[in-house]
Image: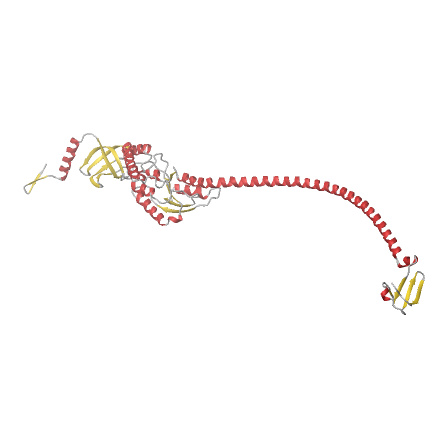
Length: 419
């Protein structure tokens, strides 16, 4: 009951809060569905209870704020449903449609008791943001900008955005560093958060860092170990998606096992479902180059061997033919030589006989024409001073002449001469 203090009617705080409690209980006897953003889940592991902070925004400003209670048993059931439907636990920063009752306790104050949460609404809200981002980027003409870039023939220099300790990053490195083909890659990690409210800014900051040293890289990869649709919801953010779409070198994403592709994955040059698949995608680019080269090498070697074998066979055949022809020619040459020699000999023999006859005739002529033979035939030679007299003009009266005959000489003195 109220007391009168200094002529004023006063109630105790307990009386006021109990009155509020009764009024709310009379007014809100049944549960009802509420739309709100769960700013903070505030889960306490030691008790299993949650004390969410719920709010509503308009134009970026908070226009309503209230605390809530989510008791352990209800939380376990709701969280199980979220993991089944969304493949993610209940967490901060999502919009929810929840079944609630007004809870007011004099010692704790006003709160909403959350009884159930519809996971389908959360997915629908995420899909709405996704479609808005897609529409905006298409209207601005930037949706396919990264996709139309040219990927290097051998994308060897990789800038990696990931969490250094994540399994996805370890899986990626394991594939590219231990490949049996000995393909070599250069890679550098740009560590970043990949989930939560701060992930958008963290990834954008690392893209800006890479852009400053972009000449050292062929591609950018954004890789994480996986997650459900809520865990990936920030990849539908316009700021992040547009940053990827406008990046000057190809961006390849491998951010989870979800089949519901996010906008960031859609606008990237290529999207692979896991980090391992990203690594395999890069390996395949090397295969696409090296396998034809290897096949060409094998083809060249095989053709070279066949050509050499064919040439060896041809050479061997030609050698045999050459030997055969040579032997035949030698035989023929011997036969020809023999016939030629025989012919030459016979001809030479005839020539010798003819020459001998000529020589004999010449010899006879020489003998016949010799001074001795001439003198024998009654001729003589008249000489003056040892020289034969060829003209009467040389003979003068009184000179001494010598006349040579076959068997001696006659000396005489000229008494007269006339023609």
